[in-house]
Image (cartoon, rainbow, N blue to C red; front, side, top):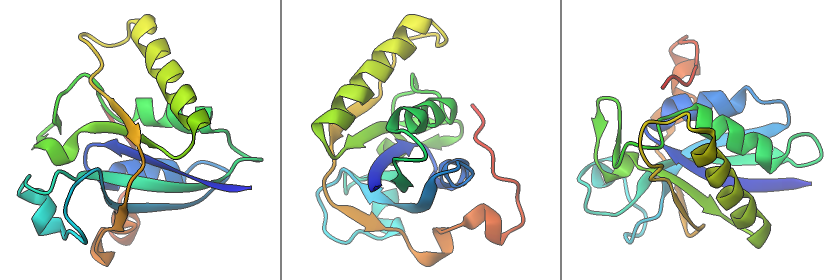
Length: 158
């Protein structure tokens, strides 16, 4: 069964590449979610005024990869203790967020966050938002498969 999940973990290029590498992921799409403007552009989102985060919508075959496995990739792709930024990327559009579609996803996301907090891997509190999925807006085509188009090996680094 094909299901969807949305993750925000900083700049979407590396996050997209990481999810594309997972067996069972059918599609990983760069986009914007969590804001209050309709049909935002990249330039709109970069102003910080739309409320959107750069996100990746992952379409996956749940018979081949679990939502929990996708959460593991999410946590490995960024530092969830950094409020509104990742590395040199600063702003609310780079915030750490999980947008859930179902009560089961919400439960799994909250349990996964709690597990990460208990592991003590991070120096500081985890600031990842866990919110209902709202509108998703596909990013401009030049953002899709960005690393692949440029021959860059896609890896998430924290």
